Length: 500
Image 1 (tube, rainbow, N blue to C red):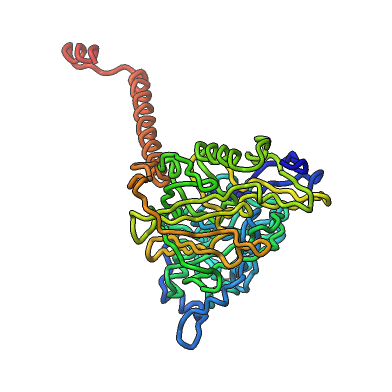
Image 2: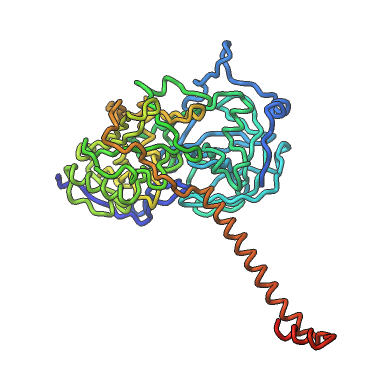
């Protein structure tokens, strides 16, 4: 190991939004109700719907290229227009939740917010809603309003929208977005699955295919939170200019999050040799709203140990791996040659006996972080431990063009056209590979799911309420008997009374 490696202790650790949204390293200044869906006819009548189309009637996906800004540190966001007259807001794109929500009151961490009372098309539903993420939460009220996406499907659409009135660790200093666009399934919507998510409404009202795709262009660029990097959210299909090579698809194993089946991990071409169920503990999901690649604790520890054994650097402090320290090199050096490639194997949707491999070069998971050091470049570890789920977040997604094909219940991956660092492609896809040495099912048979837990919670609350009611009745009965003497007509009735 060269003597130019240094570490910087962070005074603030990873924070974040969402079931996920794990925000980046924050560097110290010293260092650096149940609404019903609106019918298609009604929506078109109200808003004069028109699709962005070429003369043949096909959607023009080029209008959606480069419509995202942001970076992996604080998320990628989309400009939207809400209400009448339109109010411009930036909305975080999150495939790991299902509510569309925007700040509806002033907040010290944001520069603007949506004023529902100023919109003539706003409809209050009067339903309170709270959404909690892995880190951060908000509380608001549900309503409906018209929205438009300047660089999206042309037209305006009537959708469910939550006005955020209070929040905790959701908005962060210097972020450039004011809300969140949950693109997952209605199963995750709060307060119930009857709240139709944004993309479901868009598919119905705009009559577009039930597919969207994402490109996040932050590979190798400094994570600053300034939102200078670009990306694309293509609604209704995919854009060929955003990827190269073949698209490989893996099944969506359950429609709530975009849950997939991870079969195997390799570090430097060597199998981690864990039971594949370890990778799918609770769930394995694809989530644009999570900053890092998050691994269940056992998998994370095995991964770090394998990286240490495979890399040319043996004496990193534990704080680097857990996100508490940055590693810094002199400006003339780059760290990526010291680290191995990492690979994730996913089951092929066309043939369950085959898999394909996503490979991340170190440029994706050893991530540049902007500091005030003028003599060094500093980096963070783009992987973190998780108490339960495996989350394929921005660390991985920045290397790939990801297609969420809801119509065919599958997620597709192709090499992203912007996943290059200094002219070097930092992601690869290969396959097919046999799954003969892997279990036919790597997902736990009956894991607890969030909707199930809600049902259990309500059942327990109901049961406790019944028990409490019975206790109150039992307490009141003896009290009533002592309020006065009981009239007894004969001796036999007196005896019966004494034995009650």
